[in-house]
Length: 290
Image (cartoon, rainbow, N blue to C red; front, side, top):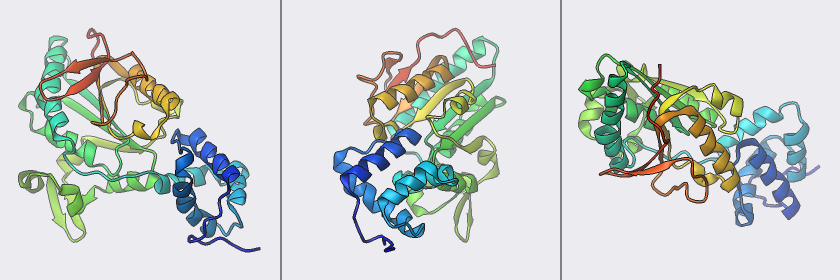
């Protein structure tokens, strides 16, 4: 038997469609016909590592091997892009701190509640949920509140990085030096998020197509899902966004990436025009989290 190495590209059209559909069924990431080279380049590494003779054998491995579930989770590290940094999309974050949070504080205070639950869906290596925690830490009106921030990602590798919470220079490309001084501890391998921020954030592995586990996330006041649904086709976008709608409390907010839209996906959300950005909101305002 001749084993493939990473430099060989021998994926047939049939193998491409089989592997593409397998990945799509698992996580909703869709590779169109123009992405064949990308998929074969990235998966050739796994064919070689597993000492398989072809992409067809790899497809059989993903379908029937006893380790298939673990392999599908592992290749998410290869197939997903996890480039991110602290305080990304600052205009949206300004809408979050200056407009959305004050509105939520007012609504919850009127209901006698002092809790806030926020989900960073597709949190990558953790910069987004820790950014949220730092921003909320600096809002005096939230002192004494119970704040819960949940970061989830399909990649086990970046979940491990997020839990470790140690970052290099590339993560701080737009971060004000004051934040680094106040909320990070310098060590030999980078800058570690301080405990007062880290304790606000819970990081876990989650596939957004796993309906049962998504439902277990519970009711949220606000969901960040930025630069994630761009990897999905319309049916999967619809499924994921509608699950977010179920998780959000009435009046809750959904923050997408600047290039993402719910146009032709769903009409469940209202697009609110704030001073700093446009944000999707679930209609209704009568309920607050317990």
